[in-house]
Image (cartoon, rainbow, N blue to C red; front, side, top):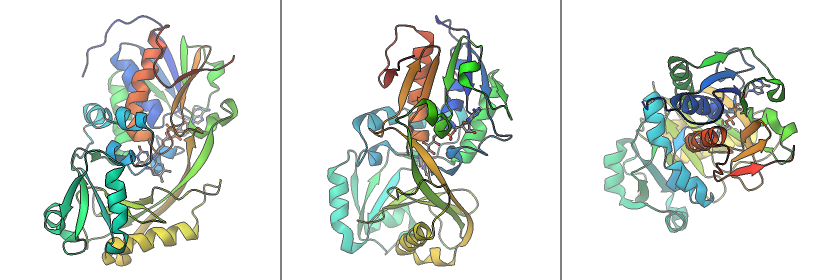
Length: 341
Ligand SMILES: Cc1cc2nc3c(=O)[nH]c(=O)nc-3n(C[C@H](O)[C@H](O)[C@H](O)COP(=O)(O)OP(=O)(O)OC[C@H]3O[C@@H](n4cnc5c(N)ncnc54)[C@H](O)[C@@H]3O)c2cc1C
């Protein structure tokens, strides 16, 4: 843990929203010696947060297949930061696979990413014995990691409290009305009225429990229509999500998405047909038109938002840049946008 340092700028900062980015900003500011008060409208961390539904992949190289360059570069900070703040990181890499009929997808994915190591069926069997014999080749991104996002944000909230931060639950506040020296608005989709360009992109997931297949790392199954990922969690639980399903503004879970997720999981391994369904979930991911997050400064308030599908991957970098912007008046971190008052 870094010792608090004496930086210039406000000595007390209020943060609104204890989702992943609000908590990350709190931890970062506390590390820099600032007094932090965090307000969360829900009575429990995660209860009203998009962050509760995330997969928890810290996969900058894989995201580079479709994301902009800053996502890859800034995402590199994530695994080390989460490990330092929470100890919750599993650094086993990521596997990317495709059914033999979709092999061209593997080539395309390797061509659009860095750090991919091509592996054959034997190497795959060593990495994931339960997938032995099912795929002739794949890609391995050894430097990537994952975490359980629910455990991670609960652990991060404990870290914030241990560093001396205050977290007020059941505290729904208006960022403009707070009296702190500076305010970070980390309300996710609830900030949309203040950020007209922000839109919600739906993400759907399910959690199953199975004793028939055990995985050690996230596995992405490439498919031209429904690219799927599965992320192992504790006690036989597996989170299944799709990188590309977009549609509908509602937070309801659609039958079509569940059919597609389960169909693709079954293609990865038939054992998923016997798995117990534990939970279905969906939420809107806060997204700007360029799919990149922003620090949007309006006077005393800085909005930290637009984390899209990279909340856990990019919160460490966003928190670092938000702290720079708060503490150093003339700092111009990338992704900072000045809004008209
Ligand atoms: C299915 C799915 C899978 C995903 N997978 C991944 C993944 O693998 N890796 C990854 O990095 N990201 C992933 N994401 C994206 C990630 O979840 C989001 O980018 C992230 O949760 C956004 O975090 P946030 O803190 O901005 O918003 P939220 O998590 O929504 O937090 C906002 C908080 O503000 C609070 N709040 C709102 N208004 C007020 C108010 N007035 N006063 C007080 N509190 C208020 C809310 O209650 C909430 O707790 C996924 C998302 C989904 C839906």
